[in-house]
Amino acid sequence: MAEIINLPRMTDTMEEGVVSSVLVKVGDSVKSGDTLAEVETDKATMPWESFVEGVILHVGIEAGDTVAVNAPVFVIGKKGEAIDALLKEFGAGGAEKSAPALPSVAAPSPVATSAPKPSQIDLSTIEATAIRMRKMTDTMEEGVLANWLVKVGDKVKVGDAVAEVETDKATMDFETYDEGTILHLAVEAGTSVPVGTILAIVGKAGADFSKILEAEAKGVVLEMETPVLEESKKEPAHSEKNTPVHTPAPAQATTPAVATTGGRIFISPLAKRLAEEKGYDLAQIVGSGEGGRIVKKDVEAFRPSAAQPLVSNPLAVPISAASEQFTEEKVSQMRKTIAKRLADSKYTAPHFYLTISINMDNAIAARKSINEVSEVKISFNDMVIKAVAMALRKHPKVNSSWRGDVIRYNQHVHIGVAVAVEEGLLVPVVRFADTKSLSQIAGEVKGYAQKAKDKKLQPSDWEGNTFTISNLGMFGIEEFTGIINPPDACILAVGAIIEQPIVRNGQIVVGNLMKMTLSCDHRVVDGAIGASFLQTLQTLLENPVRMLV
Image (cartoon, rainbow, N blue to C red; front, side):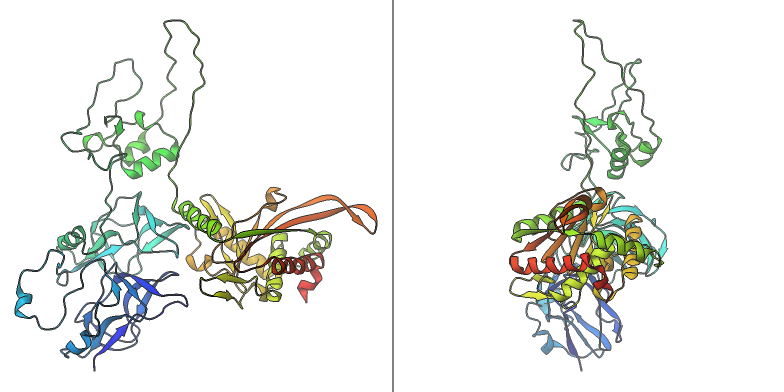
């Protein structure tokens, strides 16, 4: 008997999902465990697997749809089974569609034989499918296609890496979930595109995929953002009005002629990025592309000329050699996300700050003794992570997050450790830190640091933190405040260990003090709760033997 398959809740906080791709069509046979679609949840893009066997009788979604949890999506049953009664339960389909619903699988009425509307393009007979930009991290909204790993005509299978994509977290391999021949590459390397954009077409060799692009252009699916010329989306380089003009330079001039119109330089996005990285003056590069457009090979072959001599002044007034100079670079996906998330946090969560000084004399001695026997070198940061994890176990209200209508008190302790990388900041997570030894924590943190340096961190490495630590002590920073890393309620800013005079037993002696500042979300954590947490943390670090019990 046919049955309706509703969108399941795929994460504990999911309320709706965005369909990245539909992997089945009407008439396909599926069994338990087969993937029906890929769905972007509030955490990550996840496969939606079937728990029933049968034939797909109806598909009520398409790529780009936003679907509520428990909304009806598929009908699965026996081949040829009548499903008219079931389709009535779909109503609006529970989805906020970006295009009209797919045609019903029920027998067409005489009216339905009329010419289809322009937005109802039948893609069911095309032996090809679109590969779209997926949401590769939980916060990704767009990505830069850094490099193609395939070309038109290459054969690919499921799991093959077809491109490298710069996300807001790291540069990651983009794998295909389809099998066949690469028929079309829709995006030039170096282009930034939103999630959902068509990147390539894959299918049977020789298949006509023009209807896929037609459907895209007519808004049946998300509109594709195509590469544009540098500094102009309204004036294409190849129009008659904007045909690049090559003006012969005087024989004594050393600056080469370039293709420009009205001060614009025509250059591909990838070539522009390479030129910016190398600090080249675009006005000195001669383009070999169509209409004089600068392409990648022109930048790679370019060799900067010597600096131009100053033009003599006919009035003989001395000219200053100084000039105003600056460089600019595009904001990376990682930096965009850092800006958005932390700005939202700073101006949404009411921050307040608590600072405490901790005597690290005993911690210094304990670390020296531990490192004499430990196979992994223990850092002060490792000791802080362990102490924080144990303090959170005692103060669960600090290990919490604001969720709008509820406050979540986490019973597990996942410590996010801020790691600086060239493009910005990543926060890999030490999971169940309160149950791990100092050597386990040390090994895990060192592994994350190396993976971050090599740009090999994966979404599973940085998701799920319940508390965050940011340590700038190794840079000599004595004290600072951190912005809360959502969804945490607190972040701990750790400063350097500084030798300074302290009073001990009525005598002034030299001590080693370290300042810590706890940033708290006042919606969740009150001052007394934060202060009690810091007192426990201070006790653990000033008496580190307690961390070994």
